[in-house]
Image: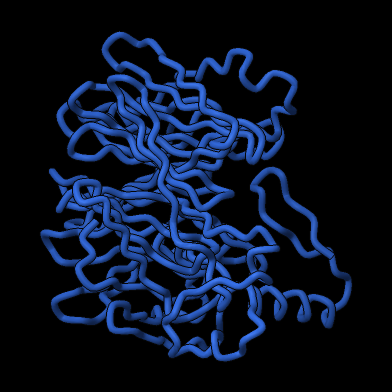
Length: 400
């Protein structure tokens, strides 16, 4: 039996016997650690198994200049990187404060990582710590910045998305369980404190009136450098969604009410033409918002593959069969691919993961061409260009 330590939001075992505890640990490892996972590959996708037994990575960051991919073990609190040139993993570094490292039934989700292009510092979120971390590769120094707020229901604000303003040395982040923007002045932020971080509440108005606040979540934040503004997605999953634009100079909000069918906005990205792209979680839809006339143009992924949801034809479930079809059986279940996080690549294309579709997609907004890459290992979902295993995924031509 498990309960939650609300002070740290950590699952805690309350079993009274050693045998019961062993069973709980074994069940946890079978569900999350993918022990014994073997890397698979296709022509386009190659998987690599992380050095540790139970890595549980989520967010990743790509350093184009040094040709490295950075990741965090959400279970053991390790920061590591993979050298694309040498094709090997570098040394992993221990994050100083990581309570779940000592608890075999816990982890702290790290949904977002970003690289400061000017300094090369690595920034990442910490769910349980209710904090943002910075790692300086030149000195191997970790610094932690505490979010000066919490959630009455969940404790942690659950930081989930980070953006930078390189020119003004500002960092912006939002938390799933906080309907606010958090803005940090990097010159004033101090290690181990909340100094230099301030809160900007999002004016929800009457949009979510009548809904229990526990259902209202913040999805992510995107920075529009040309307009010096932030986009933020807010949702009550499957019920209502809104987009907000916050002018950093005017300190004012604009509200963009979404139609009924687009009720779960999460991922945000701004393309080279200043259009906002949004993923509608809980469906197979992603869409474009024109910032001038607010026109919304919807797009859809391919249908969910029966290799994920089952098929009457066993041949469809064979690993080598790349044919992505759907059957009445799968269609009747009303299954969706769930496009989730979305990123702008250096070539102007948009990449997003299909959480339930088990694919990573590339969309070119100029040619309107969508290419989807099947993740070789099928575990039921992909998370921010990573599967729900201990493996890291490389897509040929990916540069995010």
